[in-house]
Amino acid sequence: MSKGFTPSAATPAVITANDLRMGHCVWMQDGGWTSDPREAQLYEDEAIAEIALLEAIAQGNIVVGPYLAEARRGADGRPEPTHFREAFRRRGPSNYFHGKQADLEASNV
Image 1: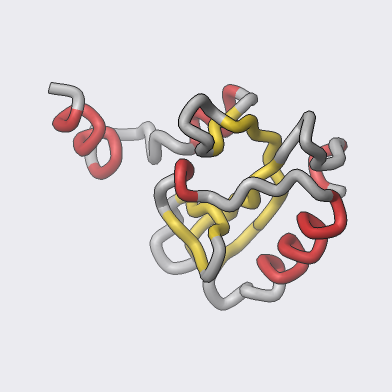
Image 2: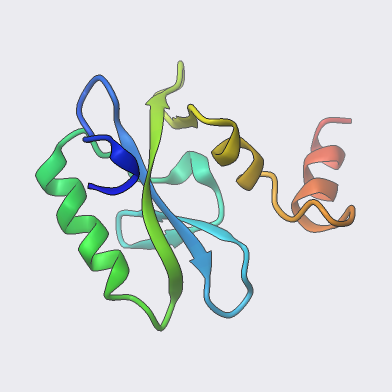
């Protein structure tokens, strides 16, 4: 498995990658990819996660660098990052204030 852990009920995972055309972070969901990490499919079974990761890798015309990232089920049942790298990635590019950062700031006002 990727990243040195095995998805399970105790340590679920999401599949994340970068959009091939735009470069932004995306997360695998049932039926495709989403830019909202809260909409990602949460994998708690190693075999299902492995198959899904192989499907993601096969989508090289859509995404680049898919991998399993450890996550946890939040209070609302949606995935939340467990590692600072994934929390950082979900905010979007950090080189200037635009896109996701601007949208998040506007929604927090």
